[in-house]
Image 1 (cartoon, helix red, strand yellow):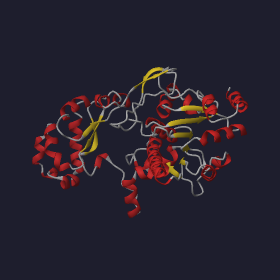
Image 2 (cartoon, one colour; image 1 turned 90 degrees about the vertical axis):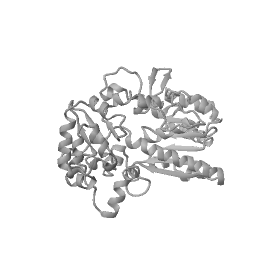
Image 3 (tube, one colour; image 1 turned 180 degrees about the horizontal axis):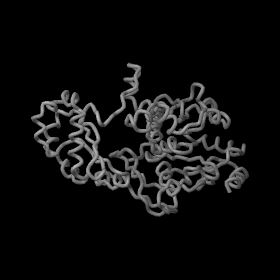
Image 4 (cartoon, helix red, strand yellow; image 1 turned 120 degrees about the horizontal axis):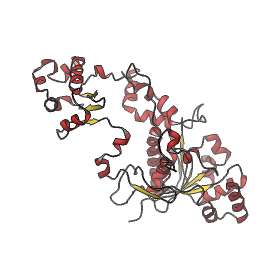
Length: 401
C-alpha cells in the first residue's frame, strides 16, 4: 500500500521544535520533507545532552533527531540573493511550505503567503507563530515557555497555592501545536484534491495553550473567574488527589466518579472500616469532610513504599498511577509493548532509542526510525533537482563551507 503522503513534497523553513515536529510527522506519513537550514546548523541540532545537565557523552542531539527524522537537509544562507532565488526554485516543486518565520521575515525573503500564492496558486502554506498573525504582537518572537505556558494562565494555574509557578519542560506546547499544524495541512491537501486551490494554515502557540486548557478557559470565559487552584490538602474529591508514600515517592488517584470505586479502594488500602463512617459514605459527605479524609489517607499511604502500594493497588480495577521519573517511565513494559521507543541506527551516532510517532496506522508502518539528516547532506542533489545552474550551486556550497 502506498504511504498516505507519497508524492507530496514539503519545504520546511523552520527551526527549534513546533514546525519541525510537524514536518517529522509528515515525513512519517510518507511526504518528502526538505529541511532548510542555515549553513552552520540551527542551535537545536547542536544541543547535546550534557549541555542540559545530563551526565552523558552522547555525541548527537536526541531531541533534534526526534523532530527531524526522515527529512532531507538543504543548507543555504539566505543573506545571498542567489540563495533566495534558488530556494524559490525548490519551492516551485513543493506542495507545502511549512515555516515558523515571523511575518516580516517571510515578506523579506518573498515567503509571505501573498507572494507564494501568486506564483503557486495550488500551494499550501502552514505557519507557526507565537501570537498569531494579527495584532500588535504578530512579529514578536516567542517560545512555548512564554506564549503557550506563561501567557495563557497554564503556568499560574498548575501549582499548589503556597508553591511557586512550575517550570515548563521543553517542547510541551510545541509538540501540541505540531499536531494542529499537521491536521490543518492534511485537511488542506484533501481540499486541494477537490477544488485544486491552495490555502494558508495558521497555528499559534498562544492559542494552542488556550485549547489545551480549554476546559478551564471555557468556564473562565463564562464566569469571568480564574479556576481555583488544586490544593491537595483540601481536594474536593479525595480520590482524585496525589499522596506521598512512606519512601517519599508519590501516587496519584484518579477516581473521578468516586462512588464507583470507594468500596474496592478502601479494601485495597486495608481500611474496610471506612465503609461504616458516615462522613465518607458517598461523594457529597466525602467532599464536606475532605480535609479529614485526606489526613487519614496521608497516614495510610505513609505506612508503605510506592512499590508496596503498587502491588496492593494493581489489578483491582482502580484508576490510579505511580508518579514516575522520566527514567522510570521510559522503561515501562506497557510502553514497550506498544512500540513507544524504537531503536534508530544512525550513521554518525550509532544505535539509540527514540520516541515513536504519536499514532499508529494499520495500513502504513510508521516506526519513527529514519535518521535525521546530516547538515546540508542533500544540498547539491536538491538544488540540481530544482534546476539551479552550476555556478549558483557552487556559490551556495562555498557559502555553506
